[in-house]
Length: 314
Image (cartoon, rainbow, N blue to C red; front, side, top):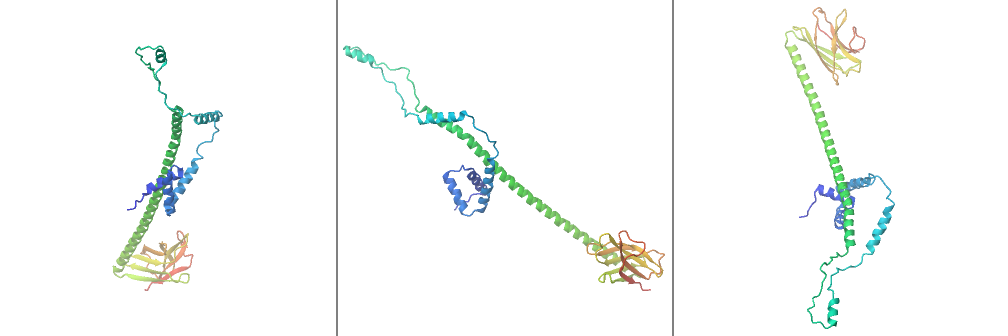
């Protein structure tokens, strides 16, 4: 079974490759992965390379101190002149032995050895150089670690921001759908209320219906008045062009002697209007009903063309 790296592992490899801290084998494997056409890895590498390029501008530039070149030259000279040393071992001092042998002495000769041998460590300068080299490498390792952490932090922040933006978009979409649903429910409730009032008016004894037809200014306009004679009310349902800004529709009681305002009819964005209007008891000789378009707030007398009108049969 082929091992597939997770997304986090791929992003970590991309960050390390951008910093140049992968081994040769790991770098070749990562480049082979890029050649396979992994677009996500390519995008991550491009983002990390931009961050690494920006890291070079974070630290303030500074001139090295003058003595640094001298120290570096001495260091190089010492490393080039390290001798091939071998451990020095103490040997017995044979001067007394040779002297006694020359005189033919048969005395017991005890060889004398150095009682305080000195242990000499081979290549002391080389050990010190390796230690110094290791110590000088530590800051680079720490810097690389911090850079990788910074890159991963930026990547995490970017993902969190994308998730936050996606969540905000989802919330906004849900709110919009909720608002649309609320409007639909309100419209349905208005229709139910309108039909209920119309049925109530039609069920009253001696109810009457007045049909209003569209006039020249708006031929397609229609309106119906359901007259509840017992309750002395008009239930008005009209279909008119949407009222322009600053204008409102106004209903009129028309008698042979005058035109009397019956009230305003507010329409929705489709031009549908509904209203329940009380009919004054003193108006007994109604001849017709009419709807005109008037300035906002209404008029004392009609000022605009008639949109719909309907005669009342005697």
